[in-house]
Image (cartoon, rainbow over the protein chains, first blue to last red):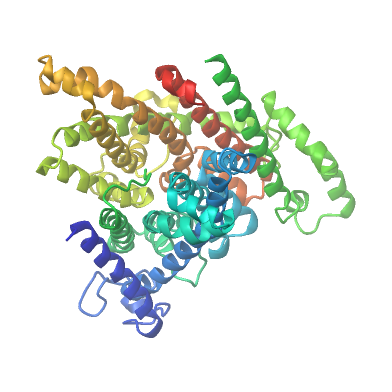
Length: 271
Length: 315
């Protein structure tokens, strides 16, 4: 069995479990301040320690996982929801003007420095989780469009597609019924990778104050809180940092593992 | 090559035109009136109108767009609402921090990534390869601003080798200035080095499977000599593309790192201008960064085609 698949699966599952569990149980109320117990290092009662308001970091990490997952999920959803149909359309009209317009549009979005634009969008339309999701999601569209088109093009030359055409099916129906199931593997792997990039992007936006707003806990904002206190309470920076790293690492390993497990010949552009 | 260049040049201009329109549109719909922001809530209506006229805010949208773009072409980025100084001067000052930082980080990233990637490729499947690849997986997962905080904690607060933030200024000498850019550059470079090392490795592995590599070995070259003479040169093409992309990423990605280290670069300028609603500065700096990214990609594409004639024919 594939080692990255197992390790990645376990790490990703841990994060999802923490997020789901936080709806029904956390060791402490994640927002409850308790000044006498502030800045405690990890111990038996507060497993990850407490912050400068005495809030329990373990509980905050659990609830923060929710924010990260929600933002990344919707951002990937935007990418798949718009990118995949565009990619299918471009592939069905290969070489035509539709293909040209879609792919040049993709190149254009690719050429934008995503972080700068995300900052611009959140700064102009107001900081917050929703705008962060949109800003991150926009840059997922060309990724999925490109992967979809790349996967679909060779399929259009295959006999079973020809058979479907002879049977009288239109391009749209062929795309959905025959192309899509055959590129599902590719899309799943790419989704895992974009999911991890989404978590990193959300953390960065929240860190500079443009992502999820208080009182919604977010790993990025926990790091921003930790910055001025890093000399006296390094655990405040270490805990959310490790949460981000392990989650992203887990998702990346899961993506690699899935790619190998689903199809060893498969190669997804990932840089 | 001429045909290819012209074609790429045309798409460069289209990209820039669309990018400038998008940025202008986003800034245009931004809530808040710069004039009332500058004068405060107690301003009189006629004073506001006078200031709007002075800033050119009363002109029609298309006219403002054209004068903005026309000005930028001539190096005039407008006047900051907040400081009343030319934006181009503000950008020029900040560029002297952001640009050296990006170059410094790119150099570090290359110095780390090339040997690591070559080493991993030469030990494909062995412990050394697995170790390097595992390290790059972790490197990719590390958010650079978190890594920056850890660097500050270790090297600035505990060991006191570097200052925790701020920029010494080039007038204090090159050494002092570079020293204050060292921790930020490392923080920016490491995650990029992880990506670059992976690209280097996979690109080299692709080349190692080629027939001409077997020929090189067959004519008596040692593994190392064949790798140096025939392998590296061919493997460099995808690596160069990534390097180009990384440079623009570093220029833009510096935004967050500049926040961590309180560096007076373009990133801090953007954030300060956002909070002061100094939208003309936000608009122009964003456009400048987008311009830099698009132009770097264009240059990389051309360099790529110049090195590899096969590409010219294809497009």
